[in-house]
Length: 122
Image (cartoon, rainbow, N blue to C red; front, side):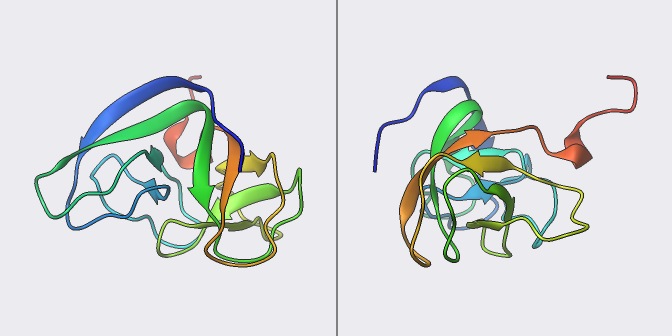
């Protein structure tokens, strides 16, 4: 695992316990599989109400939910981990800067804005 370069880190209030290195929504919850996400948690949250730093621009360390090839486009699974983007998904969240041989590995990813968070006026 290499380091990461966060260009913007914001804080969310956890809706429940959260693991580090996983995608969350602005509401502090894990997004649905394939859904838009806000950013990647830098640390864990013990429970609802905890403030959690979230990387939203730059690169981040994210936990894999499956095997991932280097440079693969990514989406989230139902627990906030990154998995390869499936055909037809409208919410990519990043691109793999490193490969993962399976679930549970931490890899550096390049963050991309989720389609569901970008307004039509942008």
